[in-house]
Image (cartoon, rainbow, N blue to C red):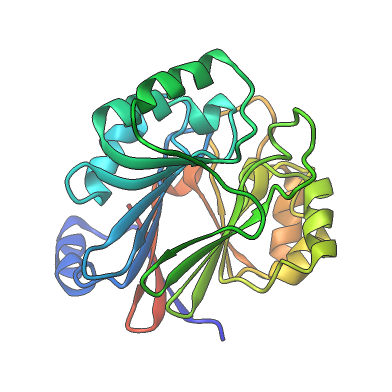
Length: 275
């Protein structure tokens, strides 16, 4: 069952302070979509006696670091996930690995030897690198992250199509993180039967017209859609994609318009606020 959505944007300073006392303590689950321009940098706070922090992608450079200080406890990142090698997703990883207490690196195991990835491996030092594929899971307390893509058959050297796609299920709500997949991968996921109705969708590939097909959106049916996007020459997000999201009556939030976005669970309600 969908949770009630409360949208809290454009609060005055005093209101922000007062609300922070009321609703930002004792958070059960929180997901932060950082505003780092064109790229992905997402932080999951998984509930538990000791909250776990999972960072999905890093953006192009070290610009996420200033924002991380707002959401982390200290400088601890339990798992750093790189969905694929493109620099707008993994370019900041060397800086994060050098300057934060990262326990492990997760990727799709398909890295090509590019300059960015060489820097990632050099910065990893003796920390484990774990390759995950379809069916693998990350478990923490009441939270489960299930990998849906890539499967046994991969898409050659197509970084975007080989993006890690992950489904987070925690405390009765669900988030789907899609990297930069396109309509071909969406069809594969549809044919596999792995997709399900979710509460929140990280819109594939920054709102590219080649993703978020009608068939895909009909199944995942997100109540909230987040587009991580900045100034770009691709035309992201494309009008076609925005129309398809509007047609399913999904609430659309864009980091280029709203800035950083925080979605968290409080008293069995999903709350959306500016970061």
